[in-house]
Length: 249
Image 1 (tube, one colour):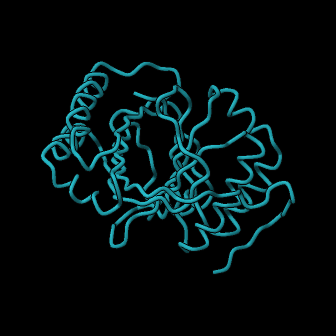
Image 2 (cartoon, rainbow, N blue to C red):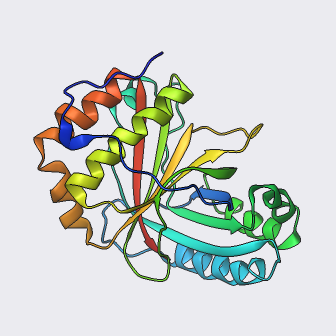
């Protein structure tokens, strides 16, 4: 396949990138008890699980190979794009309400971390309560700007599937260009599985906005170009997206 850009617009050029980070990433995602509405509180059991996860994270952060660990709690799930809906028999829909992102000193040290008892304790705690989990070791494939986990904000993990890996990667540049113009996106770290790693998703975009959910949704969904550029190009390139918005747990 070759990349196709439909309804091209000079406003939405490929996003400007900076050098990828040299870190490694372990993306641990669990579907435990997703909210039905964005502002509903977590139930007692999930709240207790999140407290336990954060305790285990503190142990994990003591490892020399670990730079930082962040725990995210999902608040909203975007409807999957057309490609996902057409391939529901083969695509694993991303409905993960808890994500733990482990950043390591380099991609090679992700294996050391995964062999550590502290990591296994974290995975065991989540898997014992999850309907489904998805775990990958990853690298940063493309980079717009660093995500600042020290400040509250709206965080995104967008899970991409598609017929062709390279087309999916190339299309992302233009999708990110639209988000930069229309929503003020300035920070994004695109994760790609390490070689030999099994993943249900070709890439996972990790990003952040310093705005509230209603404003972001308005800036996105009120734009005609969201439908005739964003969604149209996903469909034209046989790429699917499953966006989940999170807050810090």
